[in-house]
Length: 176
Image (cartoon, rainbow, N blue to C red; front, side, top):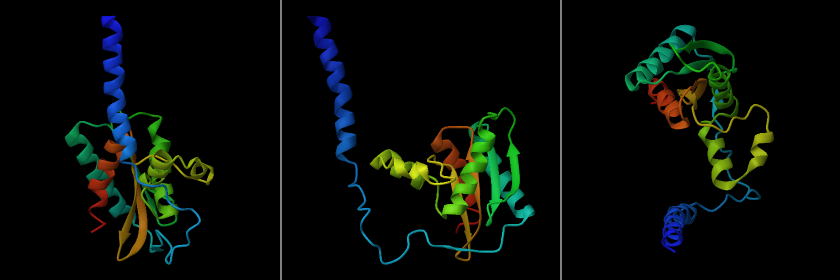
């Protein structure tokens, strides 16, 4: 009997935060709505140069090192071409193509990859995953200068929030 009561309390305790989480979810977007303006419509600009891309790589690596994280960091230009890459010591090998994929998706779709993660996780819109080159994982950030996309940075090797924090520290040098 005591075991049943403890089990019931544990299940109830676990259900409360879950119920609260679902109660806080925003309403699913209306896919039939026709917005006045195109979302994420940012013009492409001249591609980021290698020297600048490498400075962003160093900024991301400094942030990751400060926190004790081993990251893979990729910077692509406005045409989604790889310009600079760093695999920090002990960064996961599997994360190399993921960092590049995040950067390419961010520049091709002109939005942070967290937007894809949110739409899949919060609204269960799995159809997004059928689009070419989408990655529904945070850690890809467009680089916008003078209102135009000059490239993107992608980080992988930690949790999604660690990847995103690493990218944001570097992207802040461009995105003001």
